[in-house]
Image (tube, rainbow, N blue to C red; front, side, top):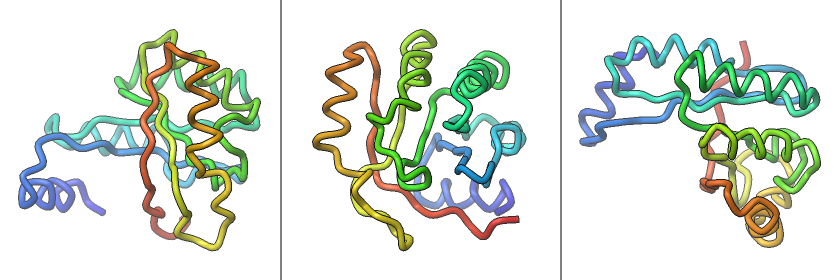
Length: 153
């Protein structure tokens, strides 16, 4: 969707600031951090970026999160658990969550049922989100529903 279309929709709904998010899954990026950064740069300050990360490469994922926050100006990390079939308590999330604490960046995730034909188990707030909050009390957690991105390129 062109940035102008997004900005027009935001204006018609009286939305001042929006969040544009990267989407990563085990097969790679659906929408990369760099693509989101380009979208944000064209938004006349109306959009903020939320980073995505490849959970299968935790060290590289932490480096990419740091780059997204420190160099691209992103304001959050977003991981969609049903894409990974791994709840937020999965061991691959914790290095990123710890980096979020260090960076002062919220960790955003999906809760509730999935839209596509995937198991909804990973979206249960209890026991998953509450356990992450207990394990990492300094972490800011954003939990909400998710929309499915458009078709893969």
